[in-house]
Image (spheres, helix red, strand yellow):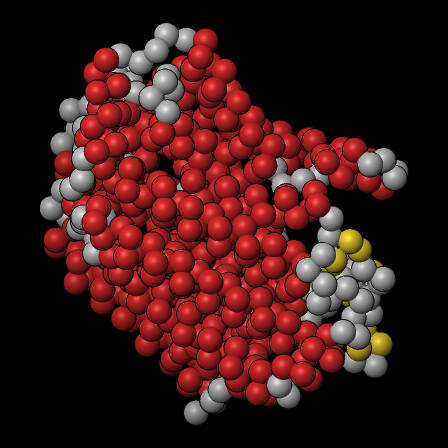
Length: 531
């Protein structure tokens, strides 16, 4: 039996288990929209924590993050991971409990758009409509990034540049199938398993990588040959032609490197702000069975986050030390985890280990498709267009919407084989700026008003697009011309958009009539109530 066939058997066994879980939960999850979209708020601490982190990290963790460390060294990867680690801890520490309570007090909201409208007594469901549209747009982008991860994985296994069949059949279709069948409970349970598989695969490759590369000393010695590669305040600069790094006698060529200054560090750490607006994470907060379990969930999530990101970065560094000239572009560098896995383990075991990438991508894409479908069926159709829609209709529309999101995500993925890291960063900024400030103000400032909520959400989401498409390109040109202001304009779009949204919410709230007594009463109740 060939090595490829054995690898595929290992991966196929994993996929079959995921489908079986979807079938197991199919009958229970189809009982009602609340069961299908939120599991009737029945997640225990382990499932809540592991599913939140697994759905959050995505294929970015096993491909994007090691790829950045492999291509340009520790600088950008380190500060990104630090920002995400701090964001994870703060989000679980201050947002989780209040959102779990408030979402139930505010009319038992079962989706994030639903919570926004019920929090501000938005009877016309304007907030629901805006939030749902933002979710559909950015989750389609998110889903496409995961399908790119599927494509890179199966493209490597099959030695095929054209990864359409692998991506659609073995990736998008299978994820859609078990999510269609089992809903939120199937998705959360598979995410629990996938979370364990992801961290297990990372730690296993990390340990074998250190051994195969000759130990920590040998790895460090090899990497110090590349200027600024191990400098957290610097970044290595690959010597490239048409974005392909030059290699001489098997040795990759680098320039002198650059400083990773204050603006770059702040910009990179701003990734942590995105957590406050991530629907796939916030939904887990809303679904925890008891508020008393949130502290335990937080501890599990923080430990998992630290270990997984540490391992992912070091794997990228090990890959560069051991296979220095193998991968010569930012996109190809994202396959370093696959290359190491297939070199360290027998094919059948390698298939199971590489399934960690499947786990990462599936645990995220299932969340994206389920939340996007709930935005269409529960928030737009039932919430706005046809308020008397029965539960059966809502469920059918959800499934149709999920198929549409899958198709759209596949089209986006096939439009260009971009870096997973860059695709995810755009969608992450969109959610972080559109929803993050509003979540914080909604939960912790009683004076926040409905007009401010609308203005804050729109301004945050719009600024991400404007900064990314208009301001940042201008900044890059100024940098090339040697103008210092250009560096300010090229910072990660999440940071300025998040600040703008916060300022807009603050100013508009103070300029408009304060909330009603009923809204203030619910706000006070959310501060002291536990479920």
